[in-house]
Image (cartoon, rainbow, N blue to C red; front, top):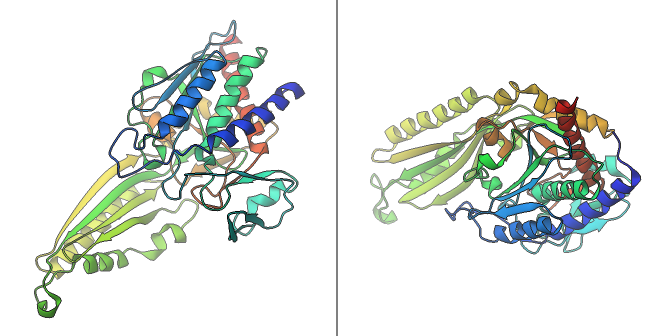
Length: 420
């Protein structure tokens, strides 16, 4: 099913306006806060979205943990089970998300894109070859000093526009829709306080990249903290006595295979990624994330770290190393393979929108990974942005229209499943 010109005109205008409004709200999450949500400013966007939903007649609440839940009743006569759509409120702490100034580059010519607030920063097809697929289209970036926030405010704008379209055009049939916007996805806590009783039987996250992508596999993910406890002694009298924790930590990291780091891997290759390194002679810490598509291969990486611990403790008498391992999320393919219809409906919906589906495995994760293991199968659908978590992040304007159309098609397929 292709949408009418009136519906498409509404979608184009509404989604773009929403996105440009949402990215200006500072919602960066924080790994250090220890609170839920991790940053209080995420409430600003959640409360704005609640007011916007209420204004079009959609029931919505924001709970104490900054989760927004909204419900749109099914179209008349539709008896199929409720389905959910989800996106996340926060942006990555890797690059500043404060005072984002979105810039629309009209009629992209295929060359370099310059940034108004940083003339030395350049986006080109060398950075992102996908740009060449949008020559003649409008491209959105930030101004050069922040990330854009398409991850995942594009997803939020897509879902909000889809709901608004269902309210404005009742001929678009759908089952009961339950929307959820989550905090803290970027720090692995997007489902930490979620109330799954407020969700449907199946769910779709709009948190993917290139137009056409559908993802039903993701990394298996672990977080590892390695703590080195040494002994500081005056350097003039340190021979045979000092145990320099910071120096040993550096040597420890040098033992990690360089070919198993993010900058040396692609496709289905896993890695060790050093997030943070700090400390002094007395105590130092290395903080890693470990990623692979197979849990067993991640377990082997942890085994390597433990064997290095044993080696270094023997080499440096008196050194103490503590290793803390935390499972972050699992590859949700094993769940989605048991409910193939959920992913197949998304693929059909993409085809119905005149787009070639691109099946991908996510070199990362989404809220859908954990949610799938909580009993709600949740594949990930494209939102259109690329070069996430960087100052060069960009999104083609046409992505909003295409993603909303896919969401509407997903709803139609689920509504007709029972009706027929």
